[in-house]
Amino acid sequence: MILIGQYDSPFVRRVGIALTLYALPFQHRPWSVFSDADKVCAVNPLMRVPVMVLPDGLALTDSHMILDHLDGLVEAPLFPRSGRARTLALRRAALVCGAAEKAVSLFYERRLHEAPSALWEDRCKTQIAGTLDALEAEAAAGQWQADRIGHDDIALACAIGFIAEAHATTFDLSRWPQIAARARAMEALPAFRAVRQPFLPPS
Ligand SMILES: N[C@@H](CCC(=O)N[C@@H](CS)C(=O)NCC(=O)O)C(=O)O
Image (tube, rainbow, N blue to C red):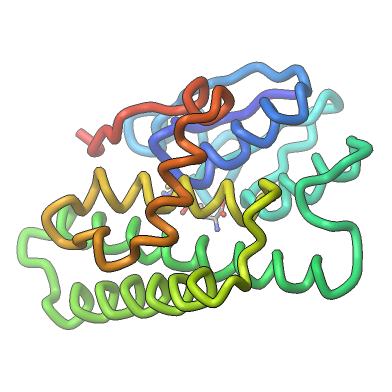
């Protein structure tokens, strides 16, 4: 299997961490969606990462879909296989990844437009902060199990890491102490330390 994309993407990184925790062998091609756009486009017409190229050449896109495929390859998947626990974990992962998507969108708005739209910036900031508020409340209420690491937790660490680096002066993480602490604890683990890359703005 070949994982395409740089680890400063929260979506590529969550797949790389899952592969590492699963001890599944893979090759990594750290292609940029900007400077390597032609190569990314050849495997994904959406020109987005992550892309996972399977041994038969089939290219999967979107971190959720890729993780669903990986979960089918292992005995102990990082999303529960069924039941309420699965629904809750999928829901949390969707919220976390949604916040990460808005954080990427906010970054592109600021970086790629000469005059960023204040309306769009404010909307993204509201969406990100509101989602983190909701997740913080759930963590504070003990609704986020502390004794296991799942895809939702990995997504959280990747999203918080991206927000901290790409939007250091926009968001003060001390507003979300529980989820920030949870992310910090995961970042100390070997798989998270092995699969990381400082944020590189597109040139
Ligand atoms: N929902 C997707 C989001 C992927 C995504 O937004 N990737 C970004 C990099 S962080 C990208 O490829 N952006 C380039 C673009 O959208 O043109 C996933 O979970 O994989």
